[in-house]
Length: 191
Image (cartoon, rainbow, N blue to C red; front, side, top):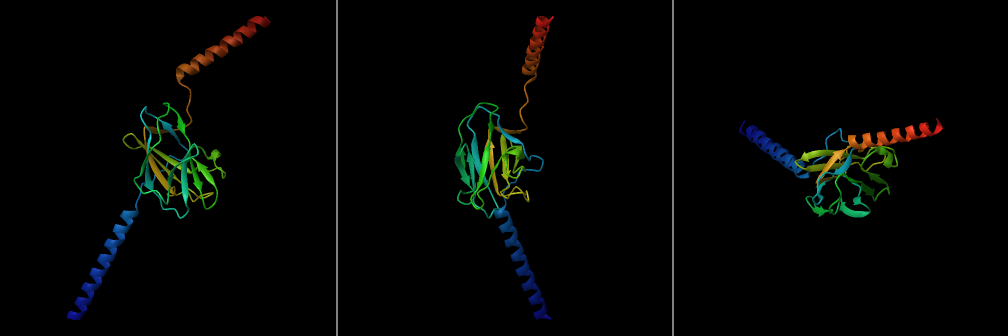
């Protein structure tokens, strides 16, 4: 009976140790992924300071470069998690279009609408205010999905998530007034 209890205790201890190691390994490899609902949103400069990018992690087997205007920001396999890059300053309201270049397939995918991508799908999920004043972006690197958005995640300061920018009401009213005046002038001339 003593031998049976010893085996049970030893087995229980081994299972507990293995479970603890598995949980530790899972949390050590965990990284943030932007929340669902931000697919196709754009990254918009929302502040006047420097835009700081921080690499958050990945679970991709493919090697991917994150580029802004053709300039390398991060590589998902060689950049240490937590690395920060100063992207500089931009005019308020500027859209930052990021490119994910997939070395293994030669495909490039972009933030924003799916029409920018070779498969017509959105490959970036954008979460504004992921942390106060910080936007989180997560990319999918496979042509036609599976759209888990876990292949490269990064965050930015001084940015927001947004749809296509619409004209401000005053600008829209001014444009409408101008069109109306042109219409009246044409009508007056023909009368």
